[in-house]
Length: 248
Image (cartoon, rainbow, N blue to C red):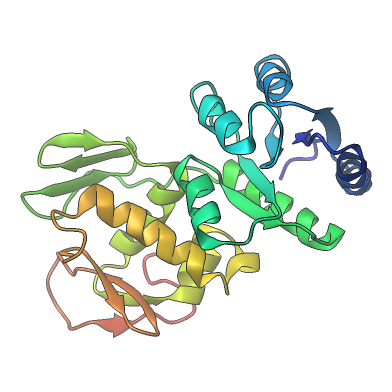
């Protein structure tokens, strides 16, 4: 992260929670602005161009999901959802609409700061790059330098997190990448135990690149260990990746 103060927009209609978040993040050195409604949040994203948005789910008029859906039409700014809901379907809905992460209330200042730092760090990661396009087979080709994925000749749009996940899988084709290794490389060390998050993104990726997501051709689940991308280059049987990737 650069030394320039990062600007975070906190969107919450509950004054006490907004003050709590603002106070703790200002102690971490961030520049904080606030919004108490969805419409105000959308206006501030356009006018202030924050580096990250903390978005409460339960708000009147426009709830957090509606705000996020509209926000993604105008901006790719990282968004962390703040929610009292812990059900998996609520987390899935936020991620599918384009959220980068979620924090369930109540949360500690330390947890919030950790999630914010990780999201900002991911946003500053350079895009994965390779010198030339990788042709997996006649149905799938990837060019990470151009950020292009072609499925049966048609370009498929991936989100930044999906690109990073695919990059590490393809670059280590034939190797079994453990859950912990993938989570650490794609999201950060703080997420190394969040296998639910990884499982969701593997599902998203399969839906976009697999001919039959329920019967995968490219991304295989090694039960209880991790995931393996098909060894399209040929060679050895599946191997388990050690703590650092051979492709790194």
